[in-house]
Image: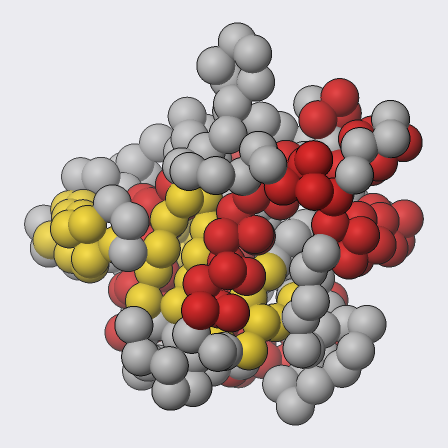
Length: 276
């Protein structure tokens, strides 16, 4: 890994209290950044207005600081690539949407409200949307109709990348994933579009996140290519599970950082659980 200009990010969503799984992935990101003498960025992914809460945004910063995180840029400290709250970055997303539309990469779609609602969140293991059948691909666009926008994937093309932990990865467009939503009909960008735009604008050189987002990386590679942005490296971390072997979620309050703090755990005791 080159030490020149290394930039990584923590990108939590304030839709609940952060749990051990979030913290371990973020800790790995910080360690890799420190090893590269790089810059760690905190970004508040608060686009989901229905679920994002100010109390959770405050808690995630407070809990991560308590645990020993030190970022150089973020919503609480500022920096040259701000703003660091996604809700304040809509002009960046609109510009990207217009570029995708002008270049013919996206089309208007009125299908599957469920898929559209899910598009705002990062898809997790077992929660991937079904392959879109292409119902609206070749329809004439009705600009007066309220619709969302889908990215037209190149069916049959293999999308490959080398993950920093899992090695060579390959997914086939149209088989492993289909046309995906980039903009909802309530005028909000999807997770896939927002993170690509932000990571490119903030000049992130390595994206460290959970292994449940490996397939999302294939989608995002297509967006990087379409938007003519520099592709970062990727490092996906194994997921933490509970006693039943189920992936941790924000509903697992017993393993949230806030609960562990209240129970008297020290940061050092929490961090002992982070080793791969």
